[in-house]
Image 1 (cartoon, rainbow, N blue to C red):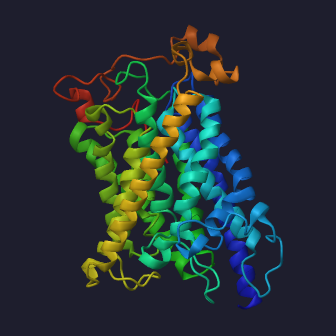
Image 2 (tube, rainbow, N blue to C red):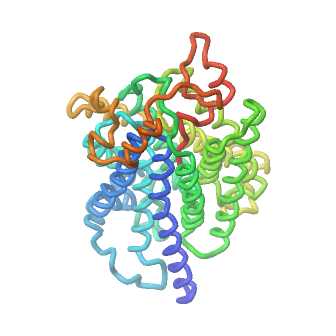
Image 3 (cartoon, rainbow, N blue to C red):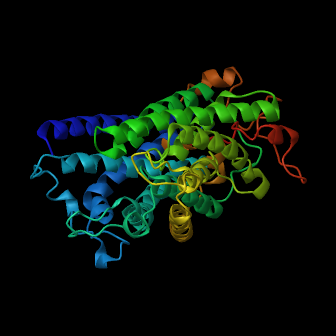
Length: 465
């Protein structure tokens, strides 16, 4: 590789790493605005706490478990000793290329954000200490193995064996539709099934600050360009196509959610637009370098509409995914991953043809098997982790702490001056329906109430990144 090209690639991935780092406070604000004022800081602390724990894990064994030579050549897990403590990571590349330390740092943020996504599903009711332990155990048993399956490619000379999904199955996943979004989404579903529902569910507090959530969504939107286009790990055509498709799909997701709300409830909402934006971004994550811009439009529109309906399932089925991590990340991740097998364009950088381009069912079969494997493994192992933590440490906060709010109970601080808020009647507790399309209303025996049916779009439920 030419020295100038290597320098350009390094500069681009450094910039992408900064963009992805920007997503951490973006996610904290996105989630923080969707909970009550009594748990805002706790939500932010869970987000940054998960990423902080990952910084230690990744250096010690996470990078090695993900990108080390596959143990036994089976493609299931990397050698935990190969890069123990990131040894050798600071060495200058023998030939011009991307510095290993930069690649490791870039992927560290991917790993941290994946765990942080799960926090949205357990908002308002999970013990902070147990959450931090979960942030250690879950990556070791679930994320690192799955990331090895998806992201670890065989070396060109055959000396290093990578993951089975990337190499043996041949499924396409540019930036983590399976390893990140499906993985985090289905893990959230398993965790909340063990954790249980918030007190008063489905009548729960509305998001306390939609502007805060919208600001977080904007930060995520900007960071996502680095997330997807940076995954090309080169400043070239693949990164350019991925960046374009990321922007198109995200905005089409917002548009689709807006239109769906207008049709169903006669009023599009800001929270809905933020949710649709995230849905479109999630959907394009695996497919950003495999579809055309027209394909990106299709993915964004489909994710926006389908996820709009998916987030309302928790009211019908009775599980409490607080900020709709499963409804957004799992569902949109599945859509984006499977649609690669249908609309992948052979003219794209990935070079694969989907069903509509005459590619047959081979690629669709690979995408389906990869999706099913991640869903089954992550759900099962997360369920076991949650059960063990529940029996040992305890998952749930006390009724008193849940009622008073986790900011005060765990952090001894408040996001706002409580005396001023109380004088203005804005205490942030459970609120009654106000006729503005909120879904913070009870579900009747025949299903969702009229308000919830009209707009299952975030009001007290929320949407995640």
